[in-house]
Length: 444
Ligand SMILES: *Cc1c(COP(=O)(O)O)cnc(C)c1O
Image (tube, rainbow, N blue to C red; front, side):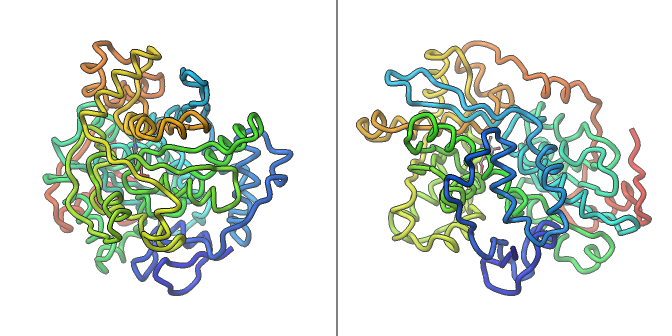
């Protein structure tokens, strides 16, 4: 299997696509062909691991990692991803819980896969890659946790100083010597701009082998298909029906994985996207014009995206708005409705959901009642409510118990460095932490 840029250009191997993150022409990597699976291909696959092995094998054909797929998947899927029943009069509503990983959000899956893959691609004696991540919260923590302590790979996490919650800051700044936490004196957009500048600055990029771990990396997309394949197969086997999915959506990474899974022949029914008040995808489906804009701040912060980068993949694979309208539906959800869904869910189940998951619950509510009742639906839960306790706890009037993994992280000592948002400052910070000789100098 070769990989091509969404903007054309030359074909590269999986290994190169994983390592470079973004194509030389600025496009996003896509598999050259979409493998097609008859359902009987999964006859002997019942666990998530089994399904993942069958599903991802074609993507690893011709890769140096082909023989290592089992080991990579064991590291990636090292925590449970349960599909649980939700109380609903006709019992056909389920929750796909993607939040049982090290940092309690679905990004642990993609980050874990990328870390497991990149560390296996590293050859002894080669200059260690430095992964730059700009984050407003969840991505940085997941990537840092996944790469923490991996020899021969360094990570620099850039976050806006003073603009992430106390708990988030701790998750970004508690890692070992190969992870440098940088509090940038600016906004998230400044962090992202700084990463882009560094990646394309010949002087800097020449000294450091930069790579990126944002959701445009194909290594984030592929493993996310595995839980959709497994969940859809379980419902199909149990009921003979294809479940519809409702996915909280920001950059369209998780939703793109679902669409890809359906395109490969897995029994995925309707695809419904839930966004927060950032309406760019909904507006596009309505009038066919793609108008990226500044993001607005909402309670579902990890979905505050005004220019979803994976739209380029969606359009490349499926076409323009006229075609997309038949493939997906999008429901923008207000903060008011997010709050109401968190309260209602708690009242009905005694469990807390995060603000992102709440958008999916609201979108499901907005479906036609007949459609809601006659089909099987899966709400995708993208993070644990305890990550967003400032929002969730006042709404439900109760504390949200921390999952053990998160409690462990919050116990760790923290250290970070504060920098101005300019490439020279970034360069000095990297030199100070990692030196030019490939050895780490960050201490605790
Ligand atoms: C990143 C994130 C999302 C949005 O996922 P995309 O792949 O960017 O659409 C939703 N919920 C949570 C908790 C996230 O961290």
